[in-house]
Length: 155
Image 1 (cartoon, one colour):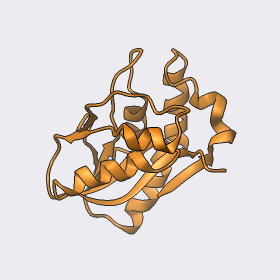
Image 2 (cartoon, rainbow, N blue to C red; image 1 turned 180 degrees about the horizontal axis):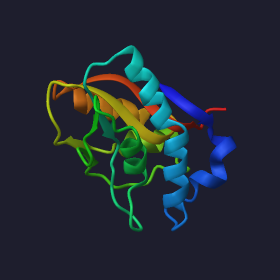
Image 3 (tube, rainbow, N blue to C red; image 1 turned 90 degrees about the horizontal axis):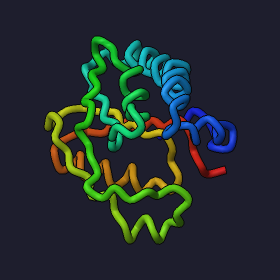
């Protein structure tokens, strides 16, 4: 798992994700982090991989995770927009680990089976969401190479 920043370093920017200015901010963050990382990774490993964003739901006119996955697009890196969706739309923001464990996201995967993929989310707090997503993807034969997030809430 790779995170580009500590949560505290980006907190004001991350809180814009459901505001009009969030579109420009997340797009810029994706261009600065996700895009160059994927370009560098593909120099080392030129196989075709797929990019799976966690719950790319449109809210307030755009899906903030979709901005991250879209920036990673390359001839050998193909985003599968909207392929991993949570049936449980509960917000984990500010919630403790126990709450997250008691309210799983209940992901459904509708993308290609038997592929290599990179899993993408904006923030990792406890890792529960990424673990649950990986488990669902594994059930479809998806080999998760690694996960990328903008920020890690663990200080």
